[in-house]
Image (cartoon, rainbow, N blue to C red; front, top):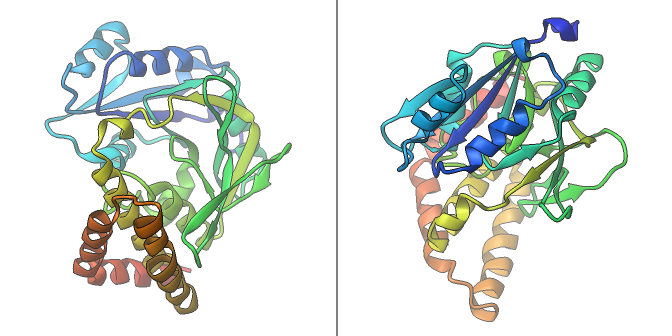
Length: 300
C-alpha cells in the first residue's frame, strides 16, 4: 500500500493514433505538474500514426518511454501494453488531446493516498471555453445510460472517464487489466470502474482536479457508422457482463422496443445497420462475455 507521496511512482500513459501536435501539447502540460519529476514516467503508445509521432516525441522528449505499434491496436490494448511494461504505484491513463492544470495530478494522488480504499479517482473535464464536459458518472443498468455528477467536493460514483483516470496499482493487481474486448475504446472505463467497485474499491470524482479536453478529437475522424457501432457493441457488452437478469430484460425492452424505433423512425438517425452489427458481435461473443461475467462474480 502506498503510504507516503514521496515514494509514489506514477506512470502516465498516453496512447495516440492520430499524432500531430496534440500529444506534444499534452506532454508539455504534464511537464508543468507540481509533482516530483523523478517520480513520473511518461509512456507514449504510438498506434501506427501516419506522421510517425514516436520519432517527434523521442526527439523533443528523450526521457519519455515510447511503445511503437505497427498497426492501430486501439486505446484499450495500448493502455495495457504500457501498464505491463512500466510498473508503478499509480497509473494515470489519459488521452493525447488533454491539457492538464499544474496541480491536477497532485490533487488526485493526495486524495488517493489519504483514502486507501479509493481505487480510482478522476477530475473535472472541461472544454476550452470552460464548459463542463464530464465529471463523475453514475450508471443506470436498466437503460444503459450514464448521468454526469456535479459536486463541489469529492464524491463516490460509478465511473470516471478514461481520458484522465488515476488508478492505484493495487487495484490493477486485484482486478486485472482493462478488458481488450472493448475495442478500440468506448465503455472500457465504465467496465473497469464497475469491476473495481465489485472488488470493494471506491471510485471517486474529485472536482478540483481540472483538465481541458479537445472532446471527440479522435472520434471525429471515424465514420459515423463506426462511432455508432463501437458505442452500441460495447454498451451491450457492459450490460451483459454487469447487470442482473431483471436489468438486462428491462434494458432490451427499453432499448430495442422504445429507444431504437424513436431514433430510427422519428429522428431518422442512421443507426439500424450499426445496431444489427453490434448485436451480431455480442451474440457471436456471448460465450466469452458470460465467461468474463462468471469470472468477475466468482472473485467477489
